Length: 560
Image (cartoon, rainbow, N blue to C red; front, side, top):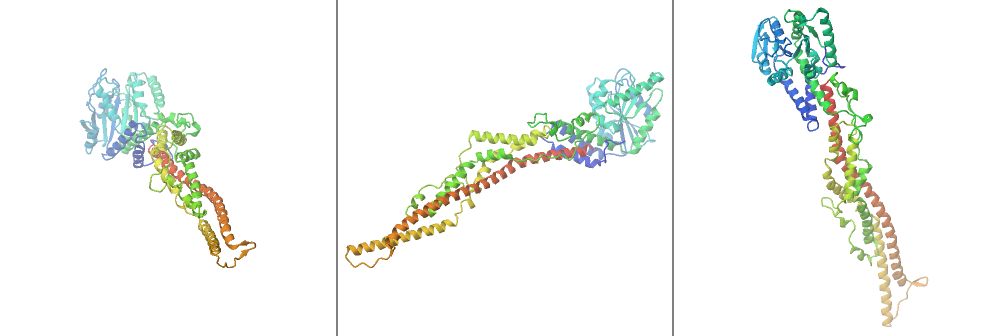
């Protein structure tokens, strides 16, 4: 028999390692009890593998009056346990040993102080007689629960009157459905039944076990009083002991059970886009039928789990742009370009006036490494960013079951406090460098303007000299003309008019250049803001989704 029916059996070491990793990944995300249970199983597996693997601890468990202690005495071949009919007589577990050597550490770990060496014909068998599971003594319950969780092979002793008792089925048999390969069910006291009734009771018992998820578990009819069926039961135990593998199958079942408890703690994968359920078509993980089958058949998540693609989206990008005052910055970029262009290419006679005005971009103090003077985001802008962050988290968490979906939504907002500084740095970086670099034509236009000023100055000086010569009534040299216009006048007036015209043309080019630089800055800002969103919002969300996918993969390995 194989514990879990799959295409290939995964080594126990790999499964234990996968369970330990799954528990670590589930920390602070799933129910703490499930995580602690998984870690306890990992610890228990480590301890049990370090003890004797040559011995098989077999526990006889049953209710009051089932004849468990009588069967223990018959199998041991000695009157070791006190026998009672109407009240519990076993208050502390005791062990019958076949081959005592090497069993001490295992029994110490099981905390079974009462030990009896009864023979050597089946070396390796340790038979335990447990207290009655339905005892009114709380200590008896605790002793049974402790050893049922630790022994290698479980033998449940039932009697014809109480084999259908809900207490044993609901408290023990059904929760141990995944341990069916390390379980035997004994129907004791069959000597009290007429011949045909034995078969009917066995059929009914097998039906109940199938409902519990224990179909195929060996069912043996015995009578501790007459010895009927005892050889068959002893032969079954001897086979298990000789194989020396019951301990490994028990540990494998514990690992699978703990892994599936972790998977069950994630809840069904049916979630709608708002994380409140209803979106079955978007679910990642096993279908609903697999969840319902967890109590009957071992079901693991289907792997690999496909992690949905996560992106910031245009809504979030626009909200971040508004929060970073991008429209204001772009307007300042365009106006600053015009301002600097006029200061560099305007008419030299009046350009000094432009320099008295503040630079629109420098007023924002956008130098890298310093805090800017951008206006604080308004409540409307903050609310828009908050809603956009929520939408990103909800979309990313839609295919993920709770409570992992909550972790994904939280991851999308986990670094939101860093957004303001990151956006500030991004705006400063995007508006420095190429945005502020003066174009080459400014120098050419400035040179032309100074040449025109020089022409104006030459014409003015020329006219002044002629005026002084006339005032002093000295002979005037001939004045060349350009057509009818004297050159001094042409230089003075033409230089002034040409300077004004060049200044106007430069202002037109400056406006066009400002728009172009604003567009370039817009692209740089958008790319920078998208990087901020990718680093502070998308990356943590993807990391959480990848963590969930890895968790599902590890659970699948542990439960395989």
